[in-house]
Length: 143
Image (cartoon, rainbow, N blue to C red; front, top):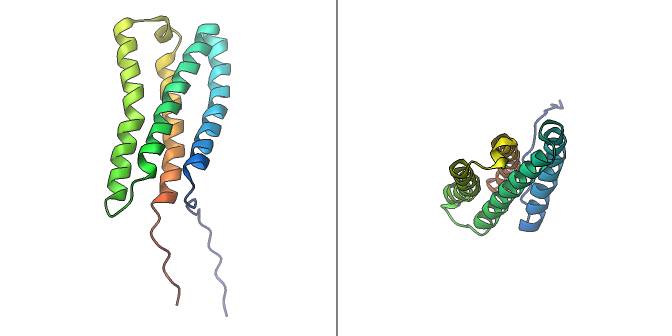
């Protein structure tokens, strides 16, 4: 008998809504610590305020995406999950950026858009990792 050693990164197992939201919150808080530390050194208190608003906007969109896609079942589940998730995740940050660009407030001067992009990428990564666990096909039997 010969044994083969294989190395692979396994997809996460499907997690419940609250566990998924906890993962999203945990990663977002860790990213917030880094972004806020940078923001306070560059922009002072206004930078921390901009980072906080950006975090809340992206976290809200991420949780909304998790909730919107959690109960989707059936043959259209992968497509519906991607479409609903993208809509929920993108709508809040885009609307917030549009309002801030029209108003030209102090958040823009404090690096809000950059903060928003950092949080958007971080939450997108976590949600993609969680979605891979939900979209796993049934395991094939080995013969």
